[in-house]
Length: 375
Image (cartoon, rainbow, N blue to C red; front, top):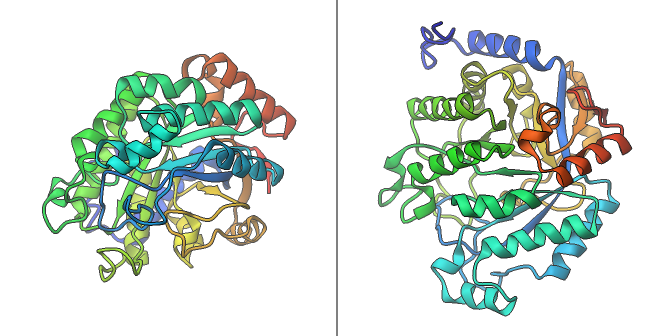
């Protein structure tokens, strides 16, 4: 059967029409519930072999701010998150800095490792052993072998596709000289995660120089991967934000209508069972996103900042619950493993992680359906 969106001109269609259709799809699948994950963020390393023109997280190894967190630092942050009621620990880190910089290799060797992925695996195991938190890893592009070693110690994984535009890898563009941002490499990781049945998160970063048509193409690529493997828990639509210390400091940010159109198109194109997320701290008018079809606010931390966008504070969960209610939605907490994937535990989780997810869900009243826990 031909998809219902096949005859829609997403660029020419009125924004109102697209938002109405997207909201109808969302309501049919998710109802008037908008979820979030209470998490703590651990920036395992801010060194990276990529030098994206919009990134403020990454520090050159010669910078005094460049670091790899030691195990005791990881554990301190994790325990603070646990004390504040977090259920998820998100490891964010630069991609393979040891492959580009001798300083990063030496820092890893001082910790007893040759490869960042191996250190990440052991830090996930440490968190599982010493806390009640569920690790989620954002490690960027991964080989089959790297996914294999991370899968037993991470409840879920993620990697933003961002874009499939090869133009952006050319000189003067956002992804120039970024080997991990070559679209084919990102798509291979997406496919590998599917082949290995990893509960996975991906998404788009809009406003970095891509065209609207390229966004639509990227959404189709994401959905095609999910149709083949069924592994995508959520897709994030994230808007570029200017920062004073980046190459793109004067690059225009996407307008609200641009964000709303992209969210609505994503909801129409993607399988309705894929959760659609947009970060609430990157727009003062984030509540409008609900009318465009999102059903999730993503990770919100009562402990740590947004290390990727440090100038944008997380909203207080209680205030987000009130503003969501004003738009007709009930805010509910969820785990990093979505209910549908919990129900398919034999496929998507090993036994130890599946048991831990179930125990946390029972202990905290997080039911194994989409109606979980009111904030």
